[in-house]
Image 1 (cartoon, rainbow, N blue to C red):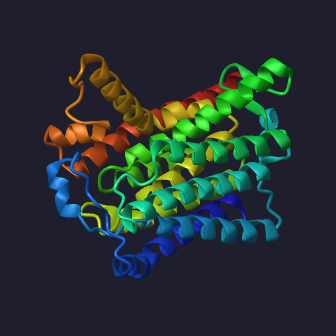
Image 2: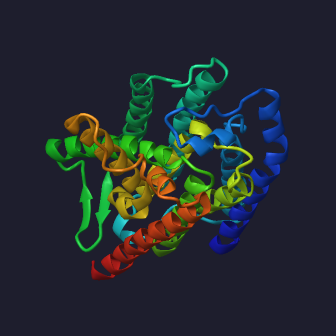
Length: 350
């Protein structure tokens, strides 16, 4: 079976499983009273969403993982090689990146589940404290980076510049650990911040998944293409239930899982710095939050945005949720196009 067929199968399975699970998981969440609690600090019109089943992220978590396992197994059983054939970054250890990435995503999802469970079942609106959540994420990030280090997946590719092996000396080794943990922790939380209105995180992440499929084709990295296709299918299936008006929310269970998976895909292409343009919306969401909090503290109560993260600012400006999803997805697509161009032309230049 060729890669293209496997990619299509992966996307179809993820879409089908995720969408179908909505008929099972959403009623189950309602039965367990796993409904969303809308905080007073949010937009007032979000109050109508009170009680919408949360933790719907389980739908695409199951869909994505099952799609990858099935598609990758069939591909390998028919003689396919999941690892990259791209000579500049060939290490023969790319399968570790995929497996470690899935484990990273599941670990982040577990932190999110704990947070959601505390909010919903234990009736503590804030869930885990910021310190507790950060400790959990940093421990998982450390374990992921340790796996990369032990498997010698320490070569990063920089478009137009070439590759850098961080195992060269103590200085570059230290940089690898520092940058890697910052990237993992930052990206995971950026994706989490994007999950604030119906369909936003799902639609933006679908655009991101398409980009990784395209880059995987350039790098001839079958495993990356298959897991990225599963992500795309999972987002499509989830949007059947999460588009406005949402029948379910992904919760931190889903958004932190997505954050972990998107981060891992950035490491899979051996160029995690490209997560900046590929996830430009995630970046803007985070920066808007940082700017708002910092300016508020410095000026003792003044604000740059009407509300942060920035998607709430546009809500307060009168944009409906569908418009925000469309515009933000287009903006992210532009960032993704820039990232793809950097890889495409950078590879040619090298």
